[in-house]
Length: 336
Image (cartoon, rainbow, N blue to C red; front, side, top):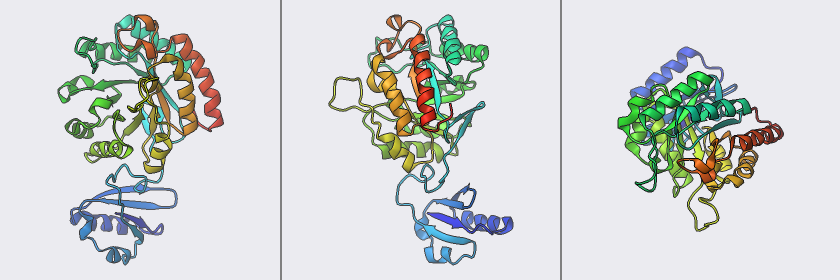
């Protein structure tokens, strides 16, 4: 349920209303816009009388939210959420580029990539330390050592870092990580999501390969229900009958999500197609669809990469991609 509050209310009256609502065991989420204040109510709202709420002199209107996700719902917060990552904004008219290797392989490798992607215009460095792989015999990542390498590159290049978490027990290694990524395989690991919801750290949530848009939003709700509203949604392709690409990029999910939620939405073109030659086209499509950014896999030598080399673009290709992205971003009034 949401309450639309009169603009001429006083702070004392408003605080009294919030206290009354919370005394009825309702959780309140306040969104203050330029002309409108919205109070979202989470809890057993079936016990509330809509007519009684409308009779309150502070309330302009009352609406029930039929969707199961509440805090992630745009009805709760009409303005786009902008998440600040050490001075790097994600959402709200900005187009943020996250780039780096699929796996952290060495300090020398990561320093080289971090230096080059930043020069080209990337704002966040990605790199896998804990790697979920389909085969148990594939490279599983450098784990805690990989995060230390990321931290060193972050300090050296003054760039925020993002890496994936696989298990709650590894959370202690993520203290200096700027964005925690939840991969497609963990999108519905609800225990992990709730634990991340209790952290004061942004979370990038990837859509599961067979998950619906509503299931993605419900997973975001698990994080937000614990108090962490800094959630970034990532469309990374879904599993279909098509075999020409690794996955099928559901580009329509971007405008749908932008309509349903106030959270930032980015696209991962690398995992979506699994082929480096398609990454530039899908990156441009992401801008045109209204995405708030992309996450691209970049490697200094893809042929020798320890994981996902086929979908990784080179440093030179990334620089060319960034030059093209600037032109497309300007056409869509996006700020890089």
